[in-house]
Image 1: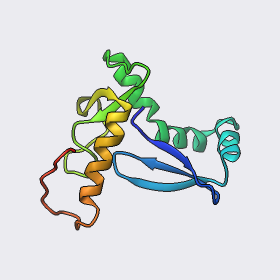
Image 2: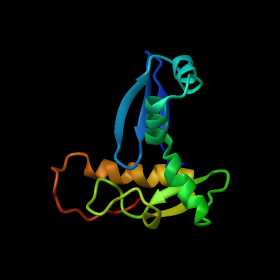
Image 3: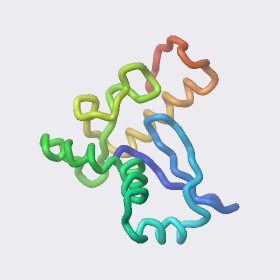
Image 4: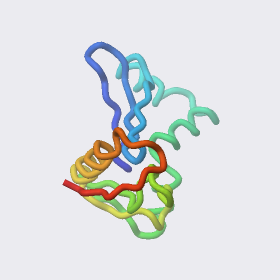
Amino acid sequence: MFGGLFLEKESGGVFWLECGTAIVERVADSAEALHGYLGSERNDKWTQQIEEWFLTGLVARLHDRGKIAAPGQCYGLKILPVFNGGLYDVENTFVLAARELLTSTGSIHHQLLDLPDGAQVKIVVK
């Protein structure tokens, strides 16, 4: 619901792209393995992983506040977690088209690519 993507490489492996931070992490050897994991026995470790990937608790709080994304929409963050004050919380979210989220966060992360931590930036959304 926050634009995270699972990407399967032709050469093997499934990777999770977290759009707020641009972190890419290998999560499975194949799509079948990922589906198997998602359908596996639920325990504390499984629950924590699902929360990390899908932010289910935050989505529930957003729904409680009446912020509900329609089909084709997701939640965006007013301030991305790569910036000071960028938190995954209800007050920092808004609803937008999923395509717009992917385009805008991709543009922002591309602009930050070679900058050192703590650099001051002016973001231009293309």
